[in-house]
Length: 364
Picture 1 (spheres, rainbow, N blue to C red):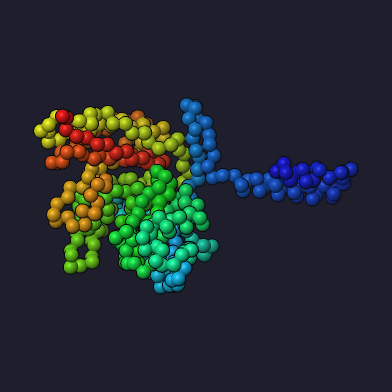
Picture 2: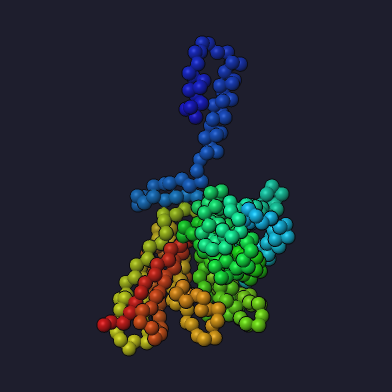
């Protein structure tokens, strides 16, 4: 605004009639308008406790990118198929959230002025062979050059000659404590259940092998069939998504930062124990919503697909929370391994979450 006035006031002026002042008034209003438009979405604010708080009008979307190497053409049928699958997945989540009593809520797509889903076509800088190894790292580097990845979830269809990405149909992960996420889909992974599952990861959900019908499981796998049956969003997952930024479009969020997690029980247990009580102290000024306890998946010879998740969090139990400073306890049944990896994920009422890992072992 001050730069605009320097342009006007820097000129040698005399008496102005009202008519002569009109251009100045118009310029002043234009500068005020530009100043308002340039205001950032997030405004820091001081609370009574002296802790910085951010106020943000939520506009978290799921955005679609169709990526091809420079020597491969874009195919309209792939775009059409992906849009169809995304609508099916959106309906699935809305149905499941409604079934669990949270209302018919789901994520929102990026759309154009006519309400049609937008698909961004991104042409790679290199030929197909360049992207066959370290695919996600190479593609992600180029995407970050063109998009602000600090918010929104990006669903990236990678159309390369390989039918998989890192040996799988797709990969999904959340970023920045629930503010953004990335979902990689291979050509073979263009299936509604695969997309819904990987989107779950992008929303912040981990694997859940308690029931093969759960979305975040690997389904009832039959080696002679490519069918993966995952038809149910668990109640614990629905409770988590109820406060997700991606399931609450147009809501205003405030955040003092991610939840704080501290383990208060011992990291060692007496030899011969068959179970341990794991206790945590949780703190969040915005109000705690849910604590989710994870362990390594229980792998058996029959769990063909679950073997791919060895060493990653597998959901076991959760607790609904209400308050800012809460102690929680979970019971963990020990298996015959030397070191047990445990994870606790906590989400607050503003959809901001944090996950910490802990290792427990027998006393020497």
